[in-house]
Amino acid sequence: MRKMPGTSKARPLPTTRAASLQPFLAVLQSKGVATQALLERARVDAALLGHDSALLPLDSCLQFLDMAAAEAGTESLGIEVGLATPLEALGPYGRGLRGCKTLAEYILQGVKRYNRHTSGLSLQLQRHERHWRVIQPWAPQLTERRGQALAHLNTLAITINSCRAAAGKTWCPPTANISKYCEPAMSYCGLFVSTELRRQDAATWCDIPIDLLGLPLWGSYGSSTHEELQPLTGALSDCVKQQIQAMIDRSDLSLPAVAKSLGVSPRSIQRHLGREGLSFFELHDQCRYHTAVNELTGSDKPVTDIAFDLGYTDPSNFTRAFRRWTGVCPVEFRAAVSIPH
Image (cartoon, rainbow, N blue to C red; front, side, top):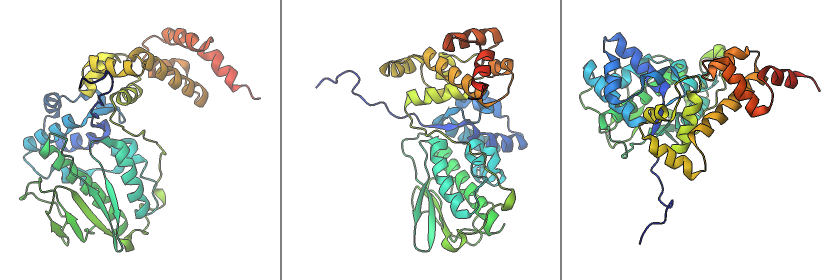
């Protein structure tokens, strides 16, 4: 039977936030690894790495991890990076966890926020009578096997390191499982000194005893930025919308630039947006409008700075666009909404 137009469901696009790679780059650079060439070979847009919430194709990032581990000569790269990574280095995902008061709150929020930080990989939580089990299932749809294994180990090391903030610097999980796809002869960097370590299946997980969950975390100086992460659905049109928002300050923001950053063709984006009755220009315009209104009503930032933040190289172009959106210039709009009622 012939398929009717528009009835086929597009496969989700696995992505992760650009902040995921920053800790890896820091460790690799400290080892003297030339990361720029590796990023280019993996087709990761290095220009996005300064935008924490920007999206990167997950398979490209995993390919980068694979090549980086080979270049650095270590199968323990994921663990090394996880142990060296403060939560603040993980962008909105990590900064939002910094205010968790107890280990239980951290685990609950960590699982929730991780699943908004990346799509294609996930975290799950199983609650048992004597422990909670944090699980990273294997994602068979991803093509980079070693890269995924390194990502698993990185997540596990960050989880254990955060638990140590509550339970002590030498704490080890009583039981853990390392994915069977991880190299068997690798070094675990002291993560499992007293752990019953297994290699039973493809998932990676560790157990956290119930009696630790109420322990305070990070003391009184912990603070959350309350940065919310939009869920990553994997739908291409949603990815494009989030990418425009993340890249809004770039003057070269265009359909080809966004397509390249997501590892897809401009034609694919046009086709998916067209199914929703949208165009790239309309999405870009809407994003600039909403961001401009938020800045004008929620800050005292000069109009010129707002224009540059929206990717305009000439503030007068921003003024003309704003007048087209609202009928008034930005200064008049700000003055009107500032009048008390």
